[in-house]
Length: 171
Image 1 (cartoon, rainbow, N blue to C red):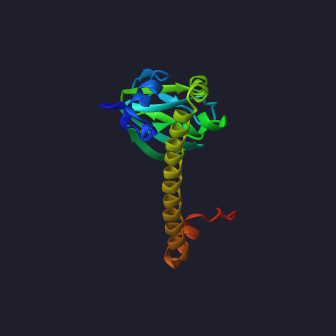
Image 2 (image 1 turned 60 degrees about the vertical axis):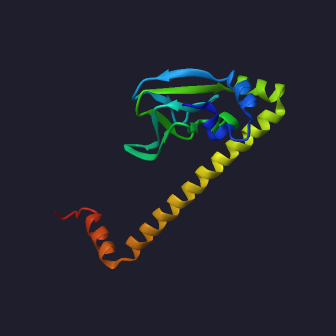
Image 3 (image 1 turned 90 degrees about the horizontal axis):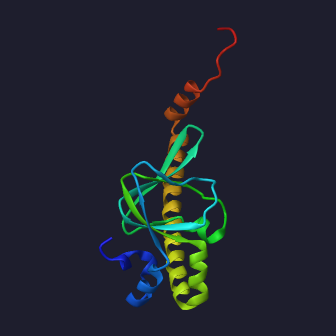
C-alpha cells in the first residue's frame, strides 16, 4: 500500500492518529492459495490488504459460492473480530499478499488508550459493513428476480419438471 492511510478504515483519522494506531498492526506475508480465515472458525484478528488479492467465499457441501475479490486497500475479518462470533466466510489469498493484522487484545489497548481514535475507527468499520450489506442486498434482489423470471416462464418450468422427474419404478 503506497499510503497506509488510504484504507477506508482510517478515513476519519488524522495522519498522526493513523501513525499512532498502525503501531498496533503487525505485517504478515501470506503465500498465494493460503486460507487466511476459515468459515466457522473463531476470529480475533482483522486484516488490511497492503498488497495482493484475496477471494471471499462460502462453501456448502461441494458448492463454492464466490462472494467477492478484495485488494488493496480493502479490509476483512472485522465481523468475527467485533462480535466474537465464528467467521462467516472463508478468505483465501489469490496472489501472494502482504497484510496488516490487528489482534483483538491490541484493539482493546487502542480503545483504552485513545477512545476517540477507536470511535473514529469503529465508525469507518461500520460504514464498511453497511456497504457490504447493501451490496449483498442488491445481489440477493437480482438473484430473486432472476429466479422469479425462470419460475414464471412456462418453458423453463416444463424443462425443470422434465429434468427433475423421479425415476419411474417400471423402467
